[in-house]
Image (cartoon, rainbow, N blue to C red; front, side):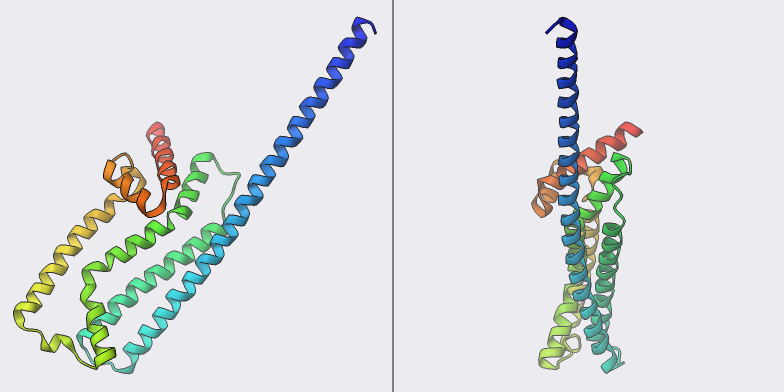
Length: 219
């Protein structure tokens, strides 16, 4: 074998190696995409189930309100809780639409934001639950009315009404401040990072930091 033959053989082997690497990389990418698509499908079904639960809550509360149109603390409480259920249903529908429209051809920054919004669903649901905390008496009023048939508000002393009212306002202000801080823009704040990590895990924290760094670079 002369030098030219050796070079040709080496070049052919090199081309074959490059082709094999390219094929393997393509297969690996397809496997990752398929795995991600399966995860998104499971996520979509989970959101559909959650939507059904919220819808059932809305129907039950609607029937409760419709049984008697009298104005009472329990009825007003049911309306308030219905609003939260509607917000939860709307959020889940938005998630279903987002899952169905994920586009892997988008720029990395936009795709990462979409994935963050999907993975942050648990965080958003937790926020919704926290937002209902200031209205804690709504659960009590409905519970007394449904279980005992008693309008608790009518039996409360005036000073207790003031106490529950003021405590609800204080809780509303504190909860609103707390929840507005829980987003990726504040992920570098230690307590925000720890709370988000506790609720949804370290993966979302990493995604939030990545998005925050991208936006900082773009500015």
